[in-house]
Length: 405
Figure 1 (cartoon, rainbow, N blue to C red):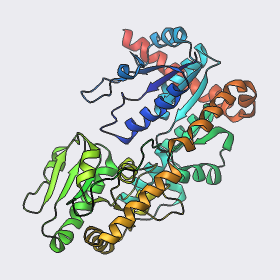
Figure 2 (cartoon, one colour):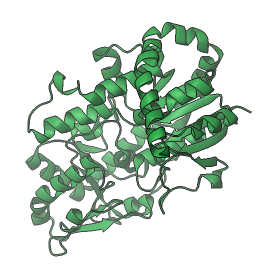
Figure 3 (tube, rainbow, N blue to C red):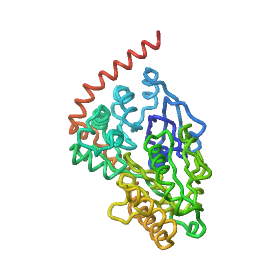
Figure 4 (tube, rainbow, N blue to C red):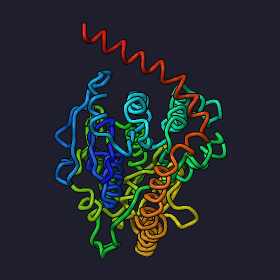
């Protein structure tokens, strides 16, 4: 039985973040191909961390900047190691290379951090993004991480295009693997049975917080035209500044953590997601389509999701248009039902698990069987391994010695 080791930035919280759901999807892919899986992390589990042992996955706590990891990874002796985000690759890949040189190394980006950072800078300066915004320290670190790994998973078609066309990364080093759906569209609650608007997103994630601020700005105009409607804002880790936005009289309700997204989406009529910036795919919109809930979002929100298919509602970044479309989708049964069906079509044609699972695992098997040749062709990766990881390695050793004293 082959062995996969995942080194996680955090313990997965699928009910708190889209990244947590994504991680469980990856685990499922490897389990379905009879891999033994061990999940390692130096993070402290939270009350909401998923119980990985319940699905047969071994777990082990590790220490950052500590040589005890060397013994652990050598004993596990994995065939494949997956790094959860580039920061984890920076911290642990040199140890993996030294102790398990024949293990296939996979980087799961979650989303391209440098893209999200560039867009955040432009957004906060109230201007359009320019090429120079990309070239940050985050960009350099993330790019180096991509080259050092044998294969990098990108979740968005847009990010694949950006990586290959703008930054000329060879396609042999990248693999497009979006969110995966195993659900079959079901007979959800009808238009008449639903009421209220909903929004959802982890409050500690800055783009989600900015989305809530946009909603607060738009809501009064929507409420004026739909006085009986409420907006229910859900999200894990509610901050004090978010709680201050709660207003019963206005119908703007901060609800906190969602125990069941499926139950919330089944009762709501429209998802509002005026996402101003970000990267990757948006889990809230993916789940909305999966569960039959129409949405209104921005170009950034819908990016990489619908291809040439009609959206699951409306896409707009103009405030007045957003308000108009929200009212229209909330009140027009024909528009609403068409939007719901559009969402089902997007899931069926672009995100069904069977569209990707076999090809992905075949890619992993092929790389393992041709690893030496693959690495020899990635000469830039070898240069970066030799140069950049030396500084990481000796910094880590210095920190370990310092901590020991």
